[in-house]
Image 1 (cartoon, one colour):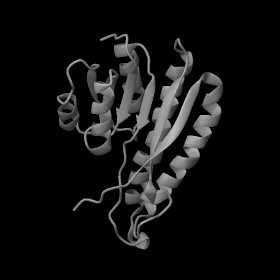
Image 2 (tube, rainbow, N blue to C red; image 1 turned 60 degrees about the horizontal axis):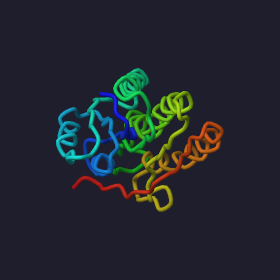
Image 3 (tube, rainbow, N blue to C red; image 1 turned 90 degrees about the vertical axis):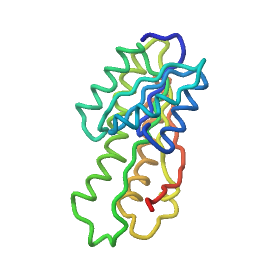
Image 4 (tube, rainbow, N blue to C red; image 1 turned 180 degrees about the vertical axis):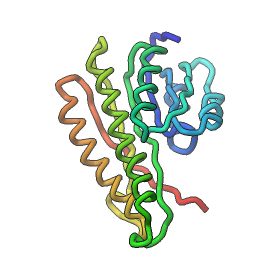
Length: 193
């Protein structure tokens, strides 16, 4: 599935912002690797591909699992030979309950996806981007307005989005010598109704 265009990988591509960004990138000529836990939703995103745009490749992945993330990036490199853009978008929230009532597992589930998942994906992207020719690429970490204006009963989500700001700054600093730029987008988390 080699291509001559730019290659993007979007996590959390099965819904919401991830789906919208994936379709927009594909329509702009990028070939897009769609990552997320729900294979059916990834296929729905792939079905939205616009004619004349790049390819879409669905790769079901749990970004909190280091082995799954390594396999995702190996599949990307195998299919397209390079990576130009990573959009770290996969995210999760905990129940909107008082912090003292959260379980360790609820806390850890959010941290594992929102922060550790972004770290693992950035790590693999950097490995590809610094070794490819031409070298370099872009990493965008999806933050949240919650990092600046937290909502009540949102400690795990808010804490991870604060951490994404720091992670983004470190990646930007460390990636500069390899022509890897890193920035952060800001979104508003929609609570399920």
